[in-house]
Image 1 (cartoon, rainbow, N blue to C red):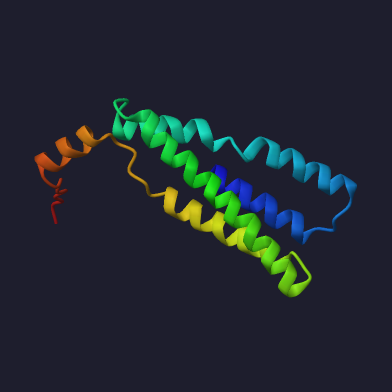
Image 2 (spheres, rainbow, N blue to C red):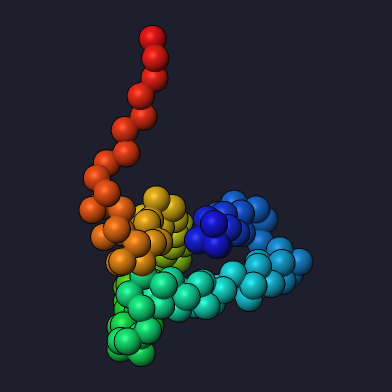
Length: 130
């Protein structure tokens, strides 16, 4: 839901008239939402993969976020150089935010052992009488 709220905040910011008040509201929303996924992702990595290699795995997660930030800024600058506007950058941020939401929403957050135990039991069939 954080990805969705962040995406809706971006969409609202560019859809509404930009003035000092809307900019301050947007900045506050981004301040609350931007890195608020970090503790949740850390907990998820620990739960799904365990703590044996947590530092390494979370390091890869954090590195991927940093690379995403770098390429986002790079492509934003390229888009501005090509078009003279940041419009495509904002639209791209909305698209990536929606994609992140859609990919995260159905995620199975059970640990590897919980998923193995569920697979060993076999599929659960629900029977109904006619």
